[in-house]
Amino acid sequence: MAAGVATVDLNERFAAGRDTGSLLARLAELVRTLTGVQGTKKVQLLINGRVAAARFPGVSTGKPISFRDLQKPNLPVPEPPPYRLPPPDPAVKALQQRLIQLGYMMRGDDDGQFGPATQNAILGFQKWERLPRTGLMDAKTNARLPRATHPVPITHGGAGKRAEILLDRQVALLINGDTVVRTISVSSGKPSTPTPPGNYRVYAKIPRWWSTPFREWLPWALPFVGGIAFHEYPLVPAYPASHGCVRQAFSVAHWTYNFASVGMPVKVVSRS
Image (cartoon, rainbow, N blue to C red; front, top):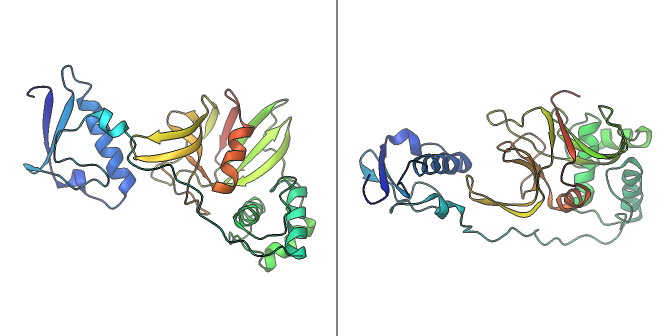
């Protein structure tokens, strides 16, 4: 170490891989660990004895970097993409009203226009009912919808608001007084970085949360264990895909944020 800069020389495996999030998290962990050593303020990274200037997307490692450098956002907060919705359709309005009855959409959402909110609600319905996860009104979904019942909590929790995250179904139940207020399609942690089952509580509400390890914005964040949180994300597939967090679509994340409060119980269930 010289002048507060620690130089570390690693092999090619450290910068290998196609998962951008894992690469950036690896770098953040290294920098945070080394700058925790007394007197170390920055880290100069070498790969096989050479400066690795452009191996980590969005981060220049050509010069020594500090953990504070990684904490500085370098991206704008993501905005929902512009949608051109189709004209109102009576059949779509009837579908939305049924989804409102079942708690997949909220009162006032029945505008008759088939858009992301309706598609997300259909996907949530399919997940709860254990149907193919198409997000479309296919034959099986259309047949099940008239005889479906309102989702109920997996566990008894008494009065007050709480959430259940059902990993097998990939849905979150937002509950008040043991009544499911809304069922939301989510994407939890993938097998290599799973969302841990257990009982937790929301410990903060952060409208714009910058993830230092993964170098990205996590809007409408509700962290409930470590750095794992409910949050908005542009890509919410029908299967587990995150680094542990619970991703939600643009159409529902702000609603969940407003529903929750600091201290709200969150139960993560493996099998429902």
